[in-house]
Image 1 (tube, rainbow, N blue to C red):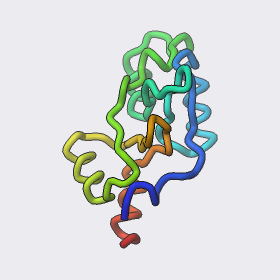
Image 2: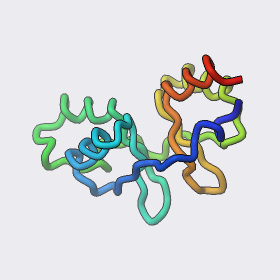
Image 3: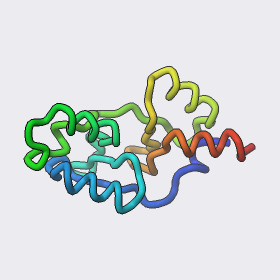
Length: 124
């Protein structure tokens, strides 16, 4: 099974100047643990639940914080033809829980560890 079989639905997107509270609300509303950060039609970062936790612990006033201050910039990405087992191994070694999948500079989706676990236990 390849990553392309795990993407294809809507990926939640925010801008770098989105306030953290709005990004967190979007993530909660859509039951996702990461959102792509896009500026000028280019993915410039990813904001994850781990980033939000760090912001809550470290920021003096999270109501004034923006996504760009807490996102992971220029995240590593993988192509849709990468095998799920290879992506899972790479994510484990890198310590990532979210992996943007891109083809020709187009974001196809974000795969998370739950997606990979599903594919490894139910896929072929």
